[in-house]
Image (spheres, rainbow, N blue to C red):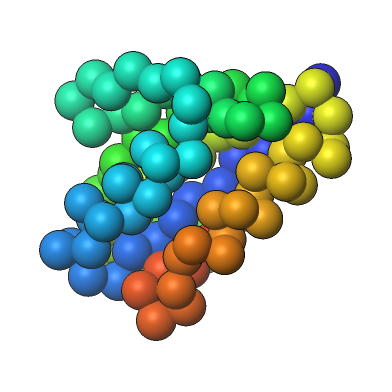
Length: 99
C-alpha cells in the first residue's frame, strides 16, 4: 500500500468550489459530507479531500485549500491519479505542498 498526503493551497476563496469540483470529477464512487469528499478513483485509489482554512504549510500566511489523502495499492496508481489532478489545476490558482 502507498499513501500520499498533501495540501492544495487555493489563492482565492471563490476558487474553492471550482477546485472541489475538479477533485469530485476525478472520483468514480464518492460521498460528500459537509464539503469533505470520500471516494475511489479510476485507478482504485481511496481518496479523501477535506476543505481547510488554516495556515499554509511552511508559510506564515493564512490560506484556503484542501487536505488530501490518497491510499493506493501501488505507487503507479497514485502517480496516475496525482498526474490527472495536477493537469487540471492551474498554477496561478493553486499550489500543491506534500506533507
